[in-house]
Image 1 (cartoon, one colour):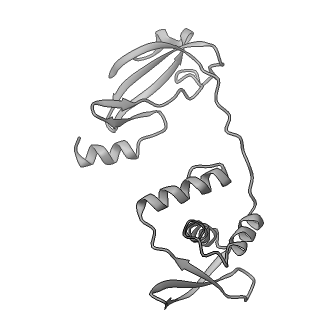
Image 2 (cartoon, rainbow, N blue to C red):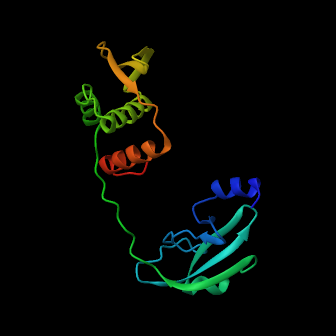
Image 3 (tube, rainbow, N blue to C red):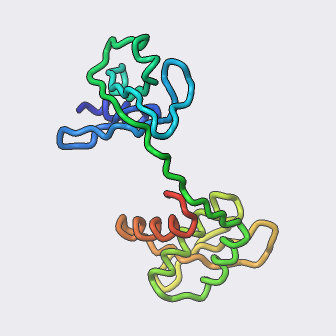
Length: 184
């Protein structure tokens, strides 16, 4: 696949099929509505799913059974009958900003590497939310230390930059995802 088509696949819309590698494609899950009528396709209802080729790659299209005869099959690579599955509901856990800030402060004296890594990524999230403000950095015992403060407060806090590698970033992201119940 060329770099142009790879970039197109990464920027594809919700119903697009993206290359999965080794000759396979990851086809999008059903979106729950008919492409023709715009009406919802209910759980347990049969419908037709089609895969068609577009200028940016493959696109999945779901069509209610009664609308299938009107569907334009031009550029359709394949189609199949399916039954609308129950949408899995993600359990939403809301962690407010105050809890995140409190967790960041409680970890300020930790010396354990996994907790330092966790605190650093949490600090980055708080900076992105504009709740934690970066002021400056310094080197202390060959370690990069960022000086930060919470928005609206003057107390300075140190944030050790542990210079995480990819495996450590993945581990911390998984931990934060479990706490925030979302994918980071």
